[in-house]
Amino acid sequence: MPLPVSLLLELPLLSSLPQVTIAHLAQHASEQSYAKREVVLQKGMPSVSLNFLIEGRLQGLDFTMDAREVGLYFVQPGDYFGEVALLDGQPQPEFVTAVAKSRVVRIGQELIKPILFASPKLAETLCTRLSLRLRGVSEHRRILGLATPLQRVCAQLQMLCMEAAAQVRIPNAPTHQELAIMINVTRETVSRVFQLLQGRGIVERDGNDLKVEDPATLRSLAEGATLS
View (cartoon, helix red, strand yellow):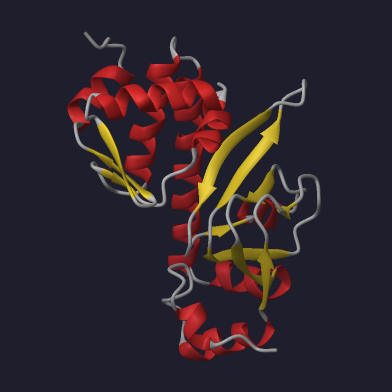
């Protein structure tokens, strides 16, 4: 069943395409729903599509040699994923799982890949996105090398603020468990750090969002300052 053209027009990557191209993609795209914790992309599988998150939240992750989960990045509504395997023709480099009930649109690679390469604007967007992902990986490695869980949590929250293009709010903030696997600590450790940060008025929950009430202190803690 064809998807509504309006659904694809809401996706930032595709919104600049001609209407006739969007209509053609909508005719051949498919939509799937995923339950929480369901695998959306399997590591090691060949690429068959470019994927877009319509609703929910996903997390890219992998496993260490001793089978511990390592969170790599989050996918928010409107974003695309699976582009690395699509572009280089190699197997999918990590798992992507649903951390909330999610809806995903898939467009077959034989259809979308020629369009991506034929459009200089889309090619530039893909290159910029890959550069941001590479910078994010470097920052993530730096965070994992920080000395204390307090530093790691604060640095990760700072990183999420920057990814959301905001200094004082993280929309649809990750759970303590999701943060824990990002920074290689236990969920209980993250919960204790949050109790401390909330008790000092540095961060505050606002529904599904997290408000950073004191960005300067959060930055200082990420840099190694201690709370007196």
